[in-house]
Image (cartoon, rainbow, N blue to C red; front, side, top):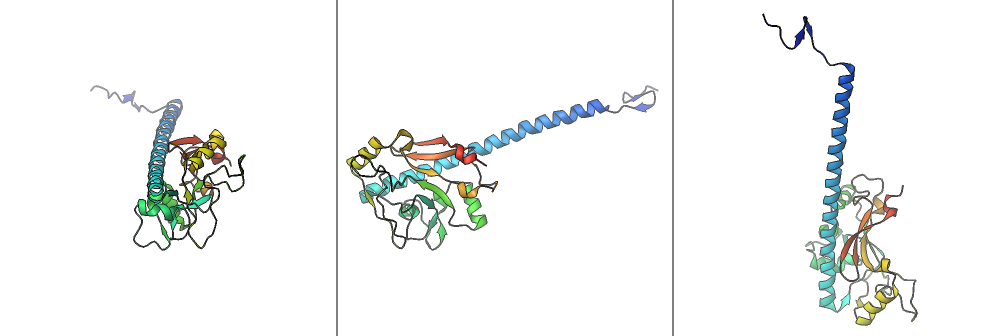
Length: 227
């Protein structure tokens, strides 16, 4: 009878230790490649979502400004997504971003870049900061006016923030006196989420930034990846 190819002189063929180690190494390499690919896809998806959300914010800002003849707030430099009808940029933009019917203690989902929204809802922290506004209440230019078009907003917490009239002078002055890197209006800010894997560094060390001229960029920010 012909001997089975799987047997040599009556003994079963087995992998040697070297062959097993080689297989393990190959599996490890393939796993690393697959993991890196999945991570890249996840980060790319996060960036796309962040840019899409920022475009919605930019459009709402533009429409509000056209309707009111003035920029809305913000009252504070750091902004959350709590739509409570009192203060904060979200309360001005909510009517243009699908505001919920019941605004009491409600997070405006369309204002928050995914996947950060999941973290906020899971943790129940409605006060978590999601954006930083370029509001400079200190720095002033040669004429004594602030370098930021949001600089003279009063921070009265019990009332909506004052609106900032938009005039060619305001825009020109801001662009003329700010350094190039300070032309931004709003940028993502997830510093409070450090230590939470689902929210920390979701853009791989970058922020989504809306600039004064209306364009949006992903800008590298080393501070976002500091330990």
